[in-house]
Image (tube, rainbow, N blue to C red; front, side, top):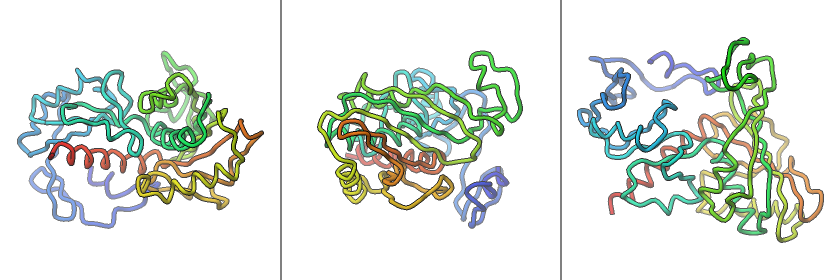
Length: 296
């Protein structure tokens, strides 16, 4: 664990002090308890004073399964993935609907955290009639290094570093959960590509209110400078590529130079996101917001 935290191929070396002492992880003098348990209900959260727990195994993604953390003393569980039944939140979009009686919540997916802010700004200003999203997504740990068996997703069983792999994603449909007025208006797909980190959303949509591409750029630039979107929406007109966004905490960085417009009602919009670092930052931001609401 110390080795994995100290060295990272994409994000570089951790510059602080990190070690193990008496079975605890010590980072810059701060001790953190470490447990190895197969079942969530076996982790003694109360013993170490943990109240807000991030469920990031990808296994306990429903309210019922994630609630197992309460047995050990956790008070709130934040699922770092989409959930079939837990309330879903995207910072900047719908976090204000969180109430203190919600004990298990979802931070949605990294792609939804990129798409939803972009879709909200465009929808609020011009109205989205319908849209299709494609995320060109970097490799993740669930993919295979060489060809292997894959029961349900045969394409997903192919070697990640050698292929562009079409895949399904519920990220676009999930936007309808955090922005109800867009429910049923968006869907999408994913293309897994051989890059280690950073992904990009392509939102192609039909607008209700006509707008030139310059008007769209102006709206997105204004959003990137607005306090409510601080740390979430970014804006660039530079000739950027994916590696330029390594370790960027923002989750929806509008690429003004990459988008195109067929006419005033049909546009293709592009936004970047570090699917690792950016998303992790939003998990922490959501916990901070929840704690403020819970303290009232």
